[in-house]
Structure formats: structure tokens, C-alpha cells
Length: 308
Image 1 (cartoon, rainbow, N blue to C red):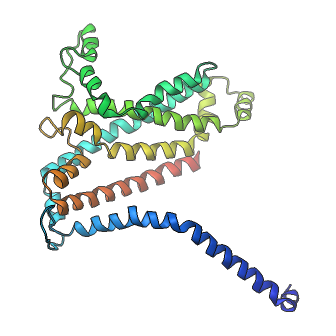
Image 2 (image 1 turned 45 degrees about the vertical axis):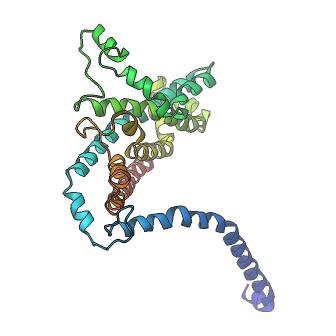
Image 3 (image 1 turned 135 degrees about the vertical axis):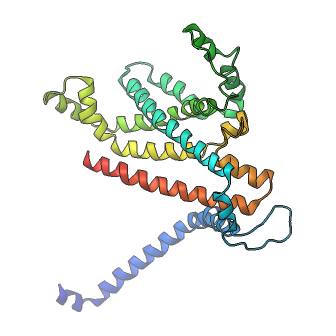
């Protein structure tokens, strides 16, 4: 081979030139996407990080760099700590429930022989619905006196609470709405994962003694859904941590900040109190928390997938 290479050095130079040409073409093709990513993601993120070290307020001409003062104030801020706790509770409720229900609905639809398209559409409707348009319906459902939810509880002798007007129940009410919004999207993802599972595996499992549906699910379906479950869990956590519309539309963070979440607090500080520097510091902490959560979740779930 060395003799051939020495005898024909032009072949090597031509091959290298072709590879360089392909690399240049690839960069040219990717340059629009890279430019848009820089313009709409990288640059704004860097701007937020820089503003987090300033005392900039919207409407004022100048600003000063204040170092870590915003972050010191942030971790001593009772409202921020309350919103962080509320976001954590909301995420811990909505994420596992929406994943479990999404998987359950997907399994039921996949096992149905007729009407699959109808049921997929019905369960996906909440994803396509605007919460602002549905706010009136949810306020009626959760109404303490005329709401259907409390009426059903009264039938079994339970006095229904003021779901959105009580500090002890408002997060649970918002969590119900969050699950309603998320289940349809998770269902679609799980349906895609179920469709990709080879049917031969179920036949092989049945030959090996897996007669019941639960055994086939445990031995075939659940292990094969590992990558899909990882993706669904990641998307669900991001969606739950980013909750804003339900709080803004239905509760405005009340009562007594019992439903105030991180994004709503950032919105209040930045666009109501106009403290852009302080809101930017909150945003940096929010992004850092989100990245850490994603890294932990990916490592834990990915390890389980490989072991499965």
C-alpha cells in the first residue's frame, strides 16, 4: 500500500481536496441554521447572563455593574424561594402522573382494533387547545359552589374545597390542568414508540411463557420503550418547570403567592416592576436549575435503559 501511495501521490491529494470541498459545502449548508441559532439563542442567553450582573431597569438610560448583588438578594428573597418550591411541587405532581396516564392511554388505544384515529384526536385536543380560551371552562369546573367537580364530591359525602381560591388546594387544581394539557402529547410519543416495537417479540415472549398481558408488557413493551420513556420524561419535566399560562390566566400567583411559580416571578420582576437586571439573574438561576435537572434525569434514566 505504501508503494502504491508513493507511486500515485496525486490520488491522495485529490482525495484530500474532495474531503475539504465536502467540509466547506457542509459548513455553507449549515451556516443559515448556525446564524439563526446564534441570533436567537446564543446572543440572547449571553445578554441575559450579562444583564444579571447589572442593576438595569427598563426605562432608565444607564446601568451599573453590581457584581453578585442580584444573586445575593435573590437567595434571600422569600418570593423567589416560594416560587421555587411551588414549581418543584407542581413538577413532582404533573410529570409522573402525565407520563403514567400517557402510557396507559397509548396502550389502550394501541390495543383497540377500531376507532384509533378518533381516540387519538380526542386525547390530543387539549394539546392543541389554547388555555386562555379554556380558562372559563376550568373556572366553572373548579367553582366551589356550582362546579361539577365539587358536585361529584358532594355525591359521596365529601365537601369540595375552593380549588383555585384556597392556598392549600390551588397548586393541586393547577396540577390537574397541567396533567390534562400534557397527557395527549405524551400519548402520541408513546404511540410512536409502541408502533416501532417488532410484533415478533411478543410472539417469542408468548412462546417463552409470557401468557398474560402484564408479562408481555414487563418483558417486551417496557424495555423496548426505554428510549421513548427517556424522551417523554425529559419533555415532561421541561414543560412542567416552564408552567406560566395557567398561573397567569387563572390565579395571578395567588392566593397569597401559593401558586406563584418561577416563570411568573420572572415575568413580574421584569415586566411589572421593570427590574430587568434582577429578572435576568432569576432567569440565569432558572436555566441552571433546568440544565442540572436534565443532566441528572438523563443519567439516571439512561442508565436504567441500558440495564434493561
